[in-house]
Amino acid sequence: MDKFIPFEKAEVSYVIKKSKFLVTASPVSTAEEARAFISEIKKKYTDATHNVSAFVIGSGNSIISGCSDDGEPPGTAGKPMLTALTGSIFTNIVLVSTRWFGGIKLGTGGLVKAYSEGVFQIIPLLKKSIITSVDKIDLLFSYSFYDSILSFIGKFGSEIESSDFSDNVKLTCIVKSDMIGKFQKDILNLTNGNVSFKILEQKIQRKILIV
Image (tube, rainbow, N blue to C red; front, side, top):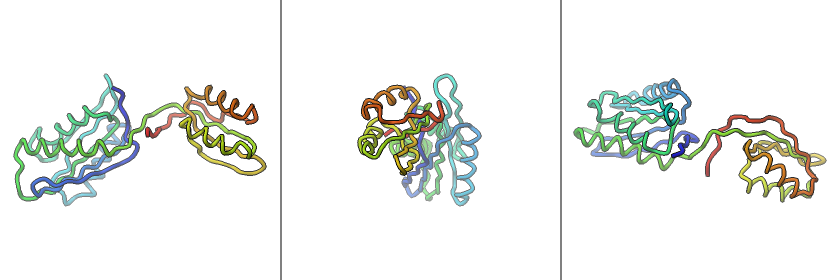
């Protein structure tokens, strides 16, 4: 199964037997970034009883992962979170489940369920993205083609990075590298060749939102 990367941070909160849980998720590229994020959350919520964490980096045979119970009984918090996270559609992700104890003990099984629940709740809230190679290009054309080219770019799933309106229209666009040939061919057909096409940069690594 292909894995996605969270596009941005997210959080979700819930209450179980008067204990409040706040799960915070963030995209990360390395284990060092994951640990730095965990430290950041711990400093932010110093009043919390526990800041349980889990992270997964990479996929296939090159997975790097880690977890911490942060004072909860061993195996009842970080490991269940990591198990649920590893089985999800995401990688390059870190989760911190912050708990404020509400006075009622949950027991071993209750803790496993409570911390797993946080992963299950936050996964559907995360926007999906992938890392892919893109090319940056300039398009120069007359105003008469503006509406049709704008519509074409949107349908093609490309991105307009900047625009300049003077004697003609100039759009700087981001196009997936493996689609650049088709993009150029189709836009030339659309305008009967009345567009200037210039590649500025090739094979830039870019995180792309999956809608």
